[in-house]
Length: 264
Image: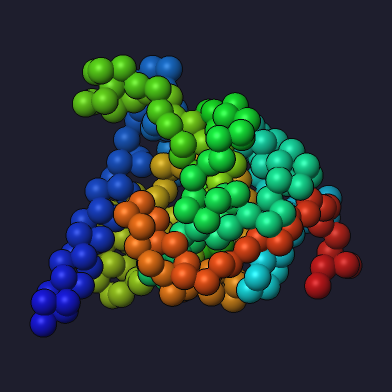
C-alpha cells in the first residue's frame, strides 16, 4: 500500500514537472551571456529529429553488450559537443566503457571508464568543459542522445535567479521515454504552447521535462530495442546513479557516413 502511494505521488510530481518545464522552455531569455535558456519561436522551429537520415549525414554506430544502435549526429546545431564526441569515439575512448545508469525504463547513461560513472583521475578534464549548446530544433524525444551536464559557472545571484554557463562532456544520456498516460497527454497538449511539439512527444515518446536542459548531439534511427533494454536493467542504487548489477558495456562507437543503399 505504501509502495502504491509512493508511485502515485511520483506520477503526480512528474506531471507537474512536465507542465512547469514546458512552460519554461517558451520563456524569452532575459539573462545575458548565459546558456541556460533560449528563445523558442514556434513559427521557425524545425523538428529535425522526426526526419530520416540523409545520404552524407554523419552517424555513430554504438556496439553494446545488448546489441547495436545507430544515431545521426547534429554538428550544425551542437558543433562543439559533436566535435568532442567524434574525437573521443575516433580515438577509441569509448571502447570498453560502461553503461553506468539505468533509470526505471526512462533513460540510461553511458560512456564512463568507471562502473560508478565517475571520471578517472588521469582523464583530460578539458573534455568535460564543453559549453552547453541548446537549439529550438532539438528535443529530448525517445532515442535522443544527450551530452550530460558536468558543471556550471554561476555567480551568487545566478544560483538563485537562474543563468550562468553550463558545461557538458564525454558521458552521454540515452533517452527512452516516460509513460504518456491520458492525463499526461492532455496536460502536454494544453500547456506545450505548440501542438506539433506536444504531439511529437506523444507519438514518438521521450522525456519532456528534460527538454532544453542539456545538449542533444544525436537521434537514434535504428536499434530502439537496444535503447529500451538499456533503460530497463536490473540495478543497485549507489546514491547518484542506478548502476546495473551486471556489467553492460559499450564495446565500441564507430563514426561513419550514412548511405541509404547500405543501411541495414
